[in-house]
Image (cartoon, rainbow, N blue to C red; front, side):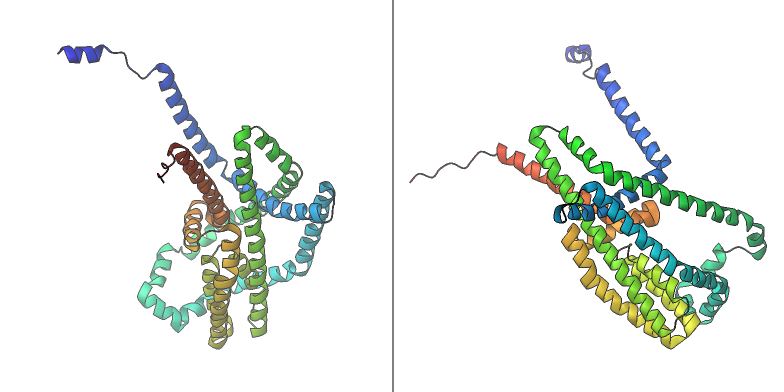
Length: 365
């Protein structure tokens, strides 16, 4: 009893300051989580602008080093060339792609009926009951007609939102290119002198990996769009231009994107151009899949970001579930950044353990 009384007589080791600190930390984490959910659109726009700015900054830095240009002039030149390239694409490619895309949308009901009547669809439906699942999720004609106006309004609103998002990203990119490097240097200057070199090394690795990944990804998307559009045009597949562009963008989602897009394009070819051309498209996507999976993708993911393909696939699935298509696009840069930071933390731990372990004793001669 005396021991119990003596233990109960001791004051609590949890002070009011400790309790306040813990409560404040929990409240801060909760507020941060709510802020991230509420500001999802702003975070996505900022992230996309940062990725574009990092990719363009590699070109700007190269021009500053090689051509001895001033940074402001190099930024203006790079942005001008990019604007001219986008304008040329908008004038030469987008009108034809929009025309073919509108025809594809108008012909979509008939194409869907042709796909449903095909032998391939019937065989798949026997095993997976695809038609039954679609009928469960579908709505009747009256519901579609009565709900036609809200989707139309959402579509119009979506166009203005897309234009606003593009302008926001453009302004972010310009400001990041102009003021970003100075902001990073000032931030690193606030670190302790003995840690500053390590922080600079981490930032440099992330910058190099992200820029290399984006440059390689742009190259892969361009190759995919060019080869697919050319192949579909030679085969005489209708709507080859929007389908080729969609195939190019699918490479932004590593591994899974080209596979799914290739299957959809093969089915559309089966419905619009017949079985032989669909077989040719199927063979093409298998050959291109080997090219991208065994040559182009390893060149980007292994030599630029040094990320294992299995980890890449896991990251793509996780971030796609978390943030949709945008999450799948930024999955690899985020994974590479996390990997670089983790390696640096492990290096710090090994250095500390190395300091604690005493040196081995000298052997007597």
